[in-house]
Each structure stands twice: as structure tokens, then as C-alpha cells.
Amino acid sequence: QEPAMPAMGRRKRIRAAMLLGFAVASSIWRSSSAWCAAKLGRRATLAMPLLPILQQPSLAEVSDIQWNEPKRKKTSLANLADDFTRAFQQTQWGVNGRVQPRFFDDKFVFRDPDVTTNGLQEYSKGTGAVLSNCKADAIDVTVKEPKQFAIRWRIAGTANVPFPGLKIKPYIVTSTFTVNDDGLVDSETD
Figure 1 (cartoon, helix red, strand yellow):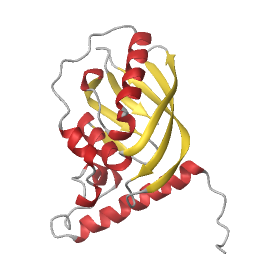
Figure 2 (cartoon, rainbow, N blue to C red):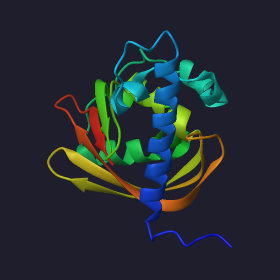
Figure 3 (cartoon, rainbow, N blue to C red):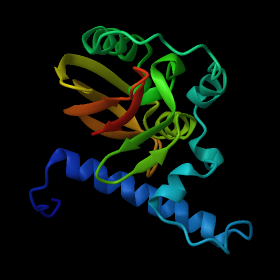
Figure 4 (cartoon, helix red, strand yellow):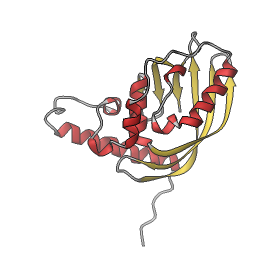
């Protein structure tokens, strides 16, 4: 019989497991001669090239993204929020990294309590590496004036860190997106 573990929320357990994975990956990178001079934090660890063990098929797909595709023309915030949510659901970029650059400013910033990425390509690579075996189901979208909208979505599946196949019990995420003066999404906060 296993000893009882203290009650901990699902999100906190997942975050703890992911942070453990980043810490393990970081210590491996630090111990290799190529990385030993660097002092690495969470941001640097997420932005670094990924260990071969984390290379999932979705990473090849991420490299096929047309990064220079024309940007979307500015529309009303409500139209952007609806189109963005449909594309989010269809491509699953919230978990596989297959973003559609036409919606995003190139300097897109992602933030959650544990990780920050700077740049759309870094977000795409990091998301595809960590969550590529998950599914994202959009529940609803809410426009928050003047330049924000939020998507509530359900995540479920398996993560790739700290080891491939880590089961994620389904839970609800609220992602708040900000929009710049050009009508492009420039940040996401979970």
C-alpha cells in the first residue's frame, strides 16, 4: 500500500512534474561540455535546443510552418477572437505548437506561472516538445475590451516531460490574449 500523499491540485501536480522535467533536462545540459559554462534558468532551458529524447514527430511539423506567411488584416476584436479560436481548435497549436503565424505578432510572448517564452517560434518549439501528445478542446471565447480576449479550453493527454508518456488528467485552462494596434495577438497569459 502506497503512503498517502498530501492533497495537491491537478494543475500543481502537472506543474511540479513539468518543472522536475525541466530541472532534469537542465542538469543534463549543464553536465555536458557544451553547456557547462551557462547558468540556466527556466526561460533559458525552455528556449534551448531540445534533447533528442524529446523530439516528437510534431517537431518536424513545426519546422514546416510558413513563418513568413502574410499577416492577417486587422478586423474587429470579436471577429479576431472567433477566427483565432476556430484556428486554435482546428490546428491544436495550444498543445502541438503548429501555430498559424498570420494571427501573431512575431514578438509574441507566452507567460504562465512557471514558464515565459519570447518569440512565436520559441513558443511553438517549446509547446510542441512538451505537450505534443495532448488534445486541446476550446470551450468558449470571451471578448474583454479594449484589446483582450480569453479562451477557456480543456487539455488532456500525455506530456513529454519529465519523461514521455506522463499522463495529464483533463483540466480547464483560461488563456488571455492581448492584441496590438495592428490587430495581431502579441501575448498569451495562462
